[in-house]
Amino acid sequence: MPYTWDRTALRYRYPNGRLVPERTVENRAQRYVEDAGREMRGLTDRLINESLSLPEFEAEMRRLMKDVHINMLRLGAGGRAAATSQHYGKAGAILREQYRFLRGFVDDLRAGRYASAPGQARARAQMYGKAAYQSYWAARQYAAQAAGYLWKRRVLHPGESCEDCVAQSQLGLVPIDDPRVTGVRDGSTRCLTNCNCEIVFERTLPSA
Image (cartoon, rainbow, N blue to C red; front, side, top):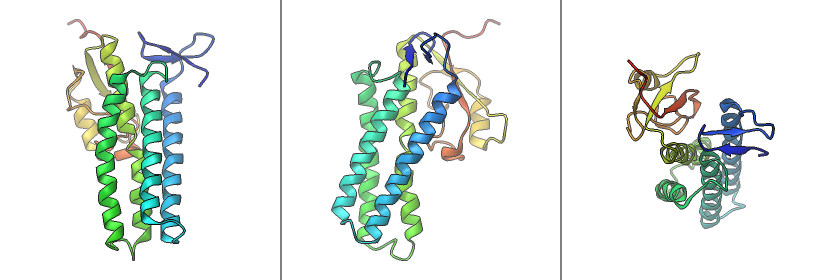
């Protein structure tokens, strides 16, 4: 992206100094994740069509998962230059968990669980791309903490919001490491990757 990262504002800026709208960045993330998911569905098709072996499928899925998590991590951190070893460590822990889930998927495929339901196998494969939102929001939160932000809150989308998102928004401002307020489109709420909420970080509590 032809943007620079403003560490204080936790926002990207255009070359002319204007802030890049948050929705622009999030739309870019969504398109990237969707593209990765389609590629993972394609690998599943190749496995079903027997043009790819199961070990090859797992290896290619791991490669794609690593790429998408690292790129989403960098996007959330403020770009490649802003990403630190701490950012990579947080994403690495998430990725290791996803690798364990992938191993379970491969075991299910080997056992023939999806022999009569290939559509379910494709959908499950695609979810591994969407799971990269976890790395994005872990990096976003770490970047906020490193910049001195102490609080966060969930802001609902003007349209429909799921019960989980509504409940989180009603908490108002909570400490930045409070697990009750989770990321957006990271699978932690009932709306899963369809979530359109926003997480707002604050340095101080509003005055009474």
